[in-house]
Image 1: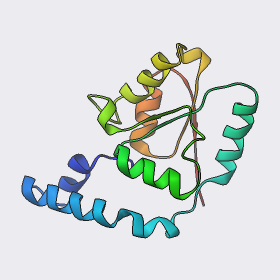
Image 2 (image 1 turned 135 degrees about the vertical axis):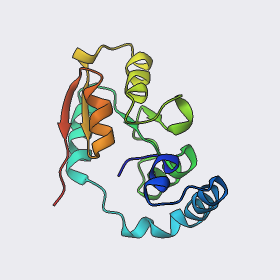
Image 3 (image 1 turned 60 degrees about the vertical axis):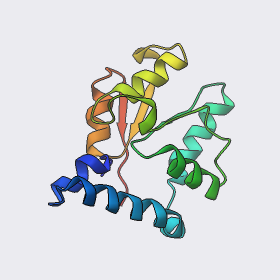
Image 4 (image 1 turned 45 degrees about the vertical axis):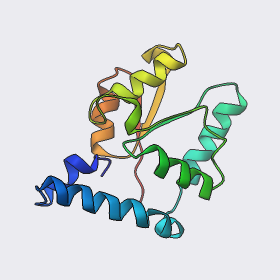
Length: 141
C-alpha cells in the first residue's frame, strides 16, 4: 500500500505503540524470507535502463527502511543500478508527502519540469502529484 507501518498498522486496528513496534520488528526479521515471492516490474526496469543509457539519473523513493530496501535490491542484483535510493530515514515526512521526491530533485539539481515520476501506490501518487512533476501511474494486472 506504500504506507509507513506507523500509519498502516493503526488502520488495521493495532494502536498500542509496543505492539506496532513488535509487529514491525517481526516483519523486518522475516522480510528477506519472502523475496522469492516478489515479482519485479521488469517492464519499468527496462524503461529505467533506457533512461540510464541516455545519461539520465534514476532514483527510488520508498517508505521502506534503508536496510530492507538494500536487501531487496541486492537480492535482485540491482544494488548498484540506481543513482540514488531515498528511504524513510532520509526525510522528515514520508509519502503521501512529497519530501522524498523533492529530496531527489534537489540531490540531482533538477526541477519538476526536468523530472518524471513512476508510482504504483495511492500514497505515492498523492506525494508525486504534490511535486508538480509529470507522473505516470503503474498498474499491474
